[in-house]
Length: 113
Length: 111
Image (cartoon, rainbow over all chains, first blue to last red; front, side, top):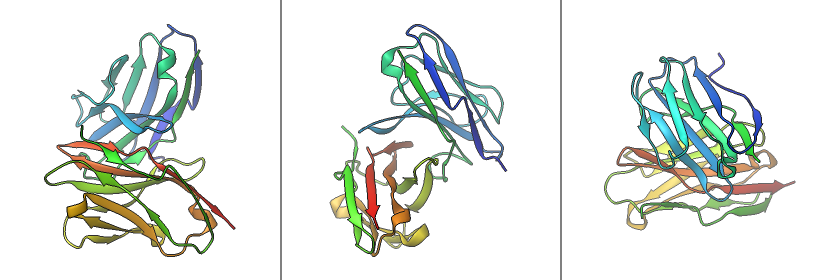
């Protein structure tokens, strides 16, 4: 049982490049989330998907887009990377919303030069 | 602004010492409260949660937390820490259908 799988684990981009972070969960969860973790700021929600077919902005959505491809997969896209997007990105899922336990992926460490 | 505050950013303890990590939030009304932990090299995992009922909740690995509504606090405690408790601890609050995390507290336990 893999849980929440994120790829890649590490990525270095140049300013202006684009990339997609992939996330998949095998727990049949309805809700999925993308967070970024920055030193001294904790985790901040970028986007979330309460259920298949829906996505909503979180606290820091600017510069990102998401796609809930199906119930299992929730991808995060950086269209034109900026140094301010250097961070550790976590995908998470829960059975139904925030009051359920969140299961996190192992994270993607992204550096934008 | 609505927020979750963890006042201790770094805590260093010796094994067997007692631990208390502070968490305060600024939301009124009904909230649900969580503590998550991130061990070195691992992903975040849930330690414990409070929704209602007994304000003293017990979690995994001997941790407990007390919800004090009048103080808007949900402090994490452990009577006797172990080296294996070295990790980063995050308080989180679900209010108005948003889960907001604190900045985290890095705990280092020395043998």
